[in-house]
Length: 76
Image: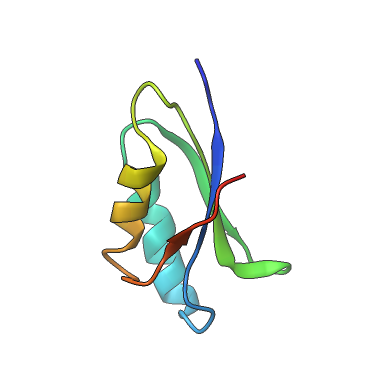
């Protein structure tokens, strides 16, 4: 199983509640193993670990953009 990491930036002023909703929505996606914001270092950067046989970065970004249309896929 290939498990790449990606980083998705959201708007820096997105609320903690909004970030929590994004984490929950991304974790519900098939193939996502972990999704979390680092609240202390980069609170606007979502790190996602996923199974590339089940999903891809573009699909995950599309899910995040349901909450923040300006979200940007950075990669790792």
